[in-house]
Length: 343
Ligand SMILES: Nc1nc2c(ncn2[C@@H]2O[C@H](COP(=O)(O)OP(=O)(O)OP(=O)(O)O)[C@@H](O)[C@H]2O)c(=O)[nH]1
Ligand SMILES: [Mg+2]
Ligand SMILES: [Zn+2]
Image (cartoon, rainbow, N blue to C red; front, top):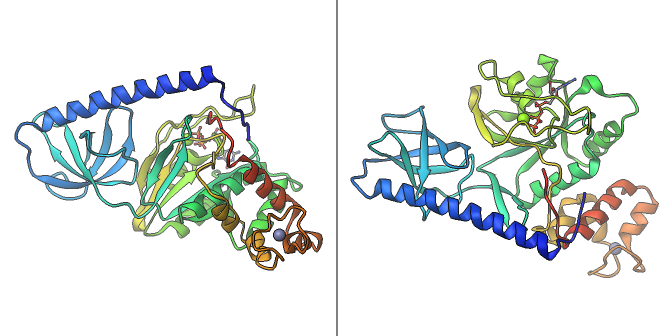
């Protein structure tokens, strides 16, 4: 996790980029307001399928356009919208829609932006598929970060190890997954090249909205392609120069499958800042530490050098792994640092 304190110059630059973005957004919102200033037709329910800088793609959920995707703007008084949002919209004379309200969200996955402000990623999600792969290698600490984020927004995580065909028998992800399984997390191993193995996803996704998250090039879009024969999402190889992905997917998009299996493909991230998470949520996400910590002598024990620390004892006895404890400490240390997201 690359962390750096921002210099004054960097902060000013980020502020001016964000101000420019806000100005553009205001202009677009004003456009939507102007559209609706005339006669507004009937209101319909819709769902945000994808979000493009200027417009949103909305699937009509009722009325004469039911099942169709409609390009829409949003009114200025409507908060930032994301894929998965349920909205109320009107059709305008020029065949463009205007969103006038957003319905209450039952869940929201967010992450901090460059300025540390929370940005929603997708809403109304029931399940997060954390996609990992041996190439580009997914560090176990990144999986831990996603597990913390999932815990923080109360969404069920599933760890998906993709590219099984590239796994060597001694790869650290294998032991990592054995440990996650032992801790009670649902884990599946598959390869997009093996149709049968990919069906494990559909079996877990019936009547749910699920999202694929993970680094660039771990195969999130390839999974969508493997699962839906009628879609062909753009995919890209790992860069030979950097060994990293090329950030092929640029916007989160929802795909409908059979049996109410809705899957959201999302852009790859290199890092997942967690400074919106407090220490209680963090330790809550590390269930084994949380459990052992209940027996510490001091209620506010930091599990560092305190006497009577049950976490230290559990570490010595091998009940908590050194790897997870180090991961916990590194996330704890990063909670208050300014992070640069460059995913
Ligand atoms: N060997 C192997 N390659 C795979 C597998 N799944 C995906 N790939 C390849 O991995 C590369 C990256 O896949 P993508 O689906 O574009 O990855 P992504 O996670 O969507 O990446 P971003 O959109 O950049 O976030 C492509 O070249 C795929 O063909 C797999 O199971 N095995
Ligand atoms: Mg992709
Ligand atoms: Zn302790």
